[in-house]
Image 1 (tube, helix red, strand yellow):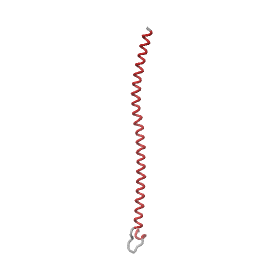
Image 2 (tube, rainbow, N blue to C red; image 1 turned 45 degrees about the horizontal axis):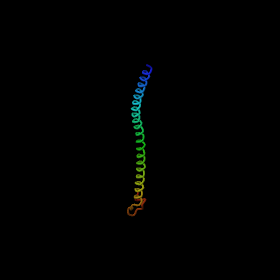
Image 3 (cartoon, one colour; image 1 turned 90 degrees about the vertical axis):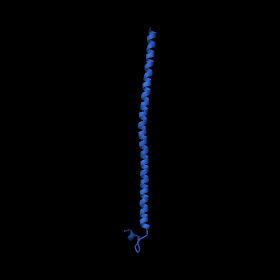
Image 4 (tube, rainbow, N blue to C red; image 1 turned 135 degrees about the vertical axis):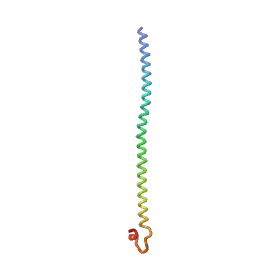
Amino acid sequence: MAAKGTSHLTIRTATSIESRHRTLKLSTRGSAYIEFSLVFILFLAVLLAFFDFGFMIFARATLQHSVWAGVRYAILATSFDGMGHDDSIK
């Protein structure tokens, strides 16, 4: 009798372990999805921040060049007849 009770206990324990393994496997897969989504959101935020800072630097350089070109044109443009550059700019 002891052998039957022991084998039944062993089978029950093995079944219990298999069901726990299945449950753990499903919960691990679900947690992997959650971890991926959190990491992906952070990665996307950092990537977009790099693009944003790059665009900001580009816009500033473009504005500086435009101001430089405008000032150069204002200084070197032809002046009115009989007036110097300073007088024609005013």
